[in-house]
Amino acid sequence: MPFVTKLRLQSGDREAVDAVVTDIKQAATRKGAEFRGPHPKPPTELRVPQYKRVDSGESFDPWAYTVYTRTVEIVGHDEFVREVADRSLPDSVHLSAEVEQVRGPDGR
Image (tube, rainbow, N blue to C red):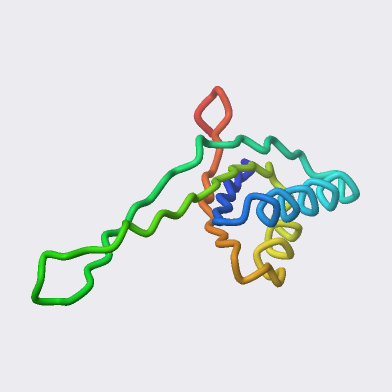
């Protein structure tokens, strides 16, 4: 039964996250791994209030930050997935992994 590893990459730097996804995709192609994606999610806009003083209601304009998310899936190729997870990524890119065991139609 193969494993499907779903990698989620997030960053405030769209070019950095796209470059990492492209590198992973090219490496998967060289290794012959089944690669699905990237699946881009709509950017998430985060806003954080900034107060001038702790004890006052006065505030600056909120701090805004956009987060870009890309999801890719790799089927099987456990060793390749380990290599990807051990890679050195730019500090601005966050990688999380979710592993799912896929069962065949007969439940095995």
